[in-house]
Length: 194
Image 1: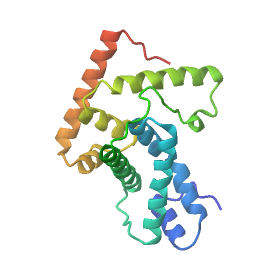
Image 2: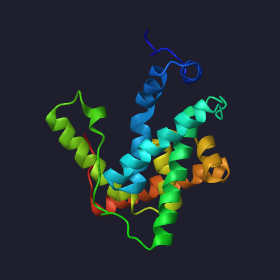
Image 3: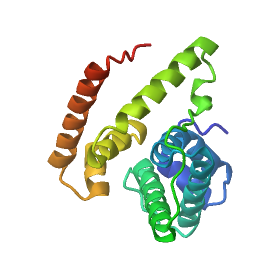
């Protein structure tokens, strides 16, 4: 049976009914966006892997408990779970007085580049590293909106709901983030071409 044309809700319903393959399809469908969001916040591949796994453990548990209700927002719901786990991690880290991981470490999900040439992957790696470094120059609110929008694939409405701000505030943060990124690229004379 091919699941490619199944909607998220069809996959969820089939999974709850006992078709375990459906959760694999959902994870495969969104793993790159969820993992990218996590790694950009965590910056430690080992910890990001743990949070990614914890995210989908919670997703599976919630689906089996039939806690999730379809609003056509499965990805934003998963990103919210990941976001909450990241917040919990930093909260625990702060309470325990531990330090965060190497700021310069990053992981590029190579599955998304499996069909590219070695040269393409090297260029993608460099662009990814450059953009990631640029995001660190942004104020936290602007960085969060960029990550949720471009790495999490969320709409501005979903971002507004997740961050408890109005849509106009989310849009404004994105606008200022883009302006700031352009200014930083100009100042540092960075070329981000493929």
